[in-house]
Length: 153
Image (cartoon, rainbow, N blue to C red; front, side, top):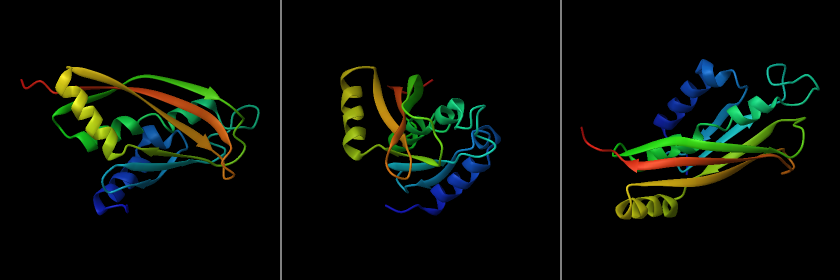
């Protein structure tokens, strides 16, 4: 799927947002239906740590918000979506540009909707890897996202 004008504008705004810009990560692609997001994290003066590799904070911060944002857009306004927990496992020092691809397919969206018909809230765990150009994993991140139906006020 391609980007839409709306997701392209969102990508540009996100890359200019000071909070995210400070991580050194750049959003490279957002699918028109929010089913896929791709990010890139280069080794640069902004992301380099004391020993010359990508700072662990940049590794995590660069992937932090995306599953939550994807689910907010895929599920719609009748759902509450929050990040609940996260973990990161550093596998190798980042010495080059790393990238990550986030995917939330229609099967996952349908499963969330089904579960929320049976219970008031659900927690889902998603994994994403930061990889170099050769596909070598440098960091494994797990995100736990809380989802519930919005209670009308």
